[in-house]
Image (cartoon, rainbow, N blue to C red):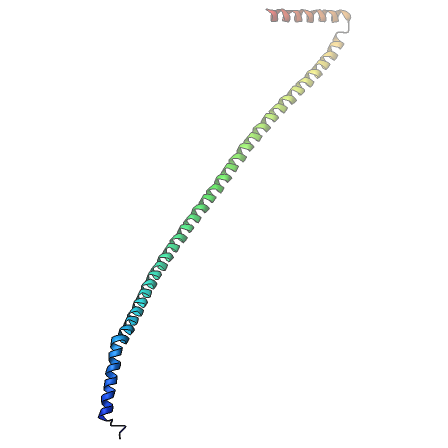
Length: 170
């Protein structure tokens, strides 16, 4: 039964050794362990604070990214609108230029047609005059078969021509 009931001497020495070990641990062991636990607690708290700050920064970056994406989309829409406006202006200018060119071509064609019409009329008048002179020549030849009639007609024409020149000179 000695195992179940220790002697008083053994109990004394066990209490003394326990007190010495407790004193040594209290003097040098517990402060070191406590300071290490405190340091670890501070390190973990600091790490948690840094993680919160990083999370806040990430949230801020996400907001900034969303803002930048919205700005890029707005810029893209503005550029597309400007391109569409430029395209419409180019088309409008090309259309106006084509209309101006068509008007010029039409005016030139009208001028050319008018000139050709005048030329044709002049040519027709010339041919009609030639025909009239030819017909008149044939008629006069038949009427003026005698020399005396021809001479009187020539004198009459010379007098008319002289009278026309005299009136032009005055």
